[in-house]
Length: 282
Image 1 (cartoon, rainbow, N blue to C red):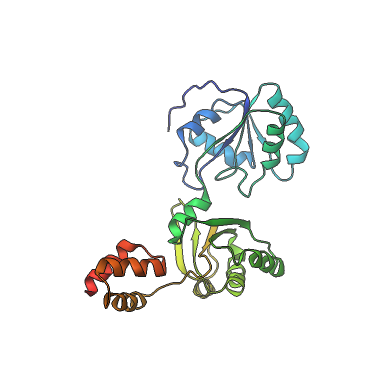
Image 2: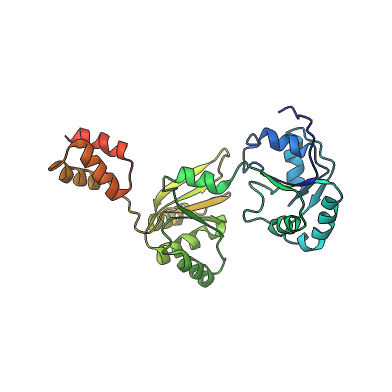
């Protein structure tokens, strides 16, 4: 358990990221701030209470701020901030406001000239992308897709030509339907289904969208929180045989270094990996 450091906090709203699974993924600054604020706003007081207890944090008070209570209590919270209170906003897991309530509170507090700051920390989008093995230089986060097929396909069509990786949150019961619609609308792109991130049963399934559909049709819907990462348009899965063929062709006219660079540019794969393979072929 981390030692809570006494800190002098100015009045304001503190957006505090919490672990997405592993309770140790809590920053020291987050522990200090949650131990010093006058009020912690959360989606579920029971879940946040367990997190605070695990880190020895004795917050002054817990209160609910979610999609059902937000409009009703926002004015009261803004009034407290204006009177010098220090208030933290947390999600059940991860970074507040990311597919969670809170942006209206932040917007209204800023419009009133009140202090608002963010404490960075765990985030399922970035963790899923890191583990996907897909390009991370450009990406778009689509949040949760609609539950109905037509609406889901309509949203996917809007993003089909975006030149970047797509990231989606999904629930286990809807995973198969979403993967099927993704393959239908986006094409058979490479993708990764990441689930239970940072937890004991963390799993990453990497394949094409069609093969992922087949995998979960055979295995059944998985459990846990899910992040789906989908490669950009034109992103292709290359087999070892594909890469060997491309490299051998390039090696007919180029040095190992130049052949690796040429195939790297063509495929988007790491130059170092291709250089090693080219050496073995030479």
